[in-house]
Image (tube, rainbow, N blue to C red; front, top):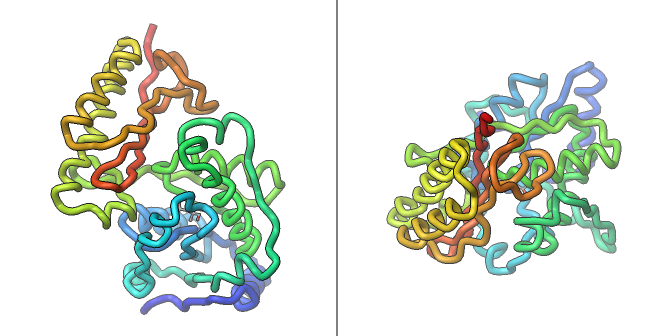
Length: 286
Ligand code: PAF
């Protein structure tokens, strides 16, 4: 049976107040819909952690720096509700736009510092303000105890963790492993917009990342590894590679070798679709 869909904040609050009175814990899985196995793995983690699970579906206009990307973002509410049915989700919150941004809305949540200064920050101006704003609202509207996010959006996970901590929102933010296609391609709602040929060629991104990460962990310096990866991606048919960076996993500072816990993060365009991915880079053993 599909979970009830609520569209008004007052209805959501009435439901969560009842759960709270019964002493139940609440998990939140925030999404923009077009659900795939990655989202469903978050739902499974949420189910295991709390008594009640809320999945939100809201295509948040404030986080799109490109109007065409917003217009083309897949909207598949009925299919999403069907995909969630076997998971025993308690409710799906699909807020009407005025429940998030009512008339006269004028507040922006902006996370500064090193988390937003690099990579997605400069390439997508305003994106993280939009994410931090809507996620703060969803945290407060659902009053969830725990929220589940995919590590595929590694910087986003850092941003929402920082935001919740800085604003004293009493919620635990939990990052879950990226779910991948058998080819290694990270699952993403944007993959729906690639042809089969594009999907096949897009697998080169994760392959190039794994190769560069292995060599960096074996002590090879980063600059030539990045250059070789960019070359491999161009040969696979990728357009612009916006970044292909080795960075400290905690501060996002650029590294030449994984001398500290490190992450390789990349963003690249395939057939007009912007794909991002990141993987752990094993620390160099001296
Ligand atoms: O990762 C997403 O799908 C979105 O950025 C989120 C967290 C649901 C906020 O709109």
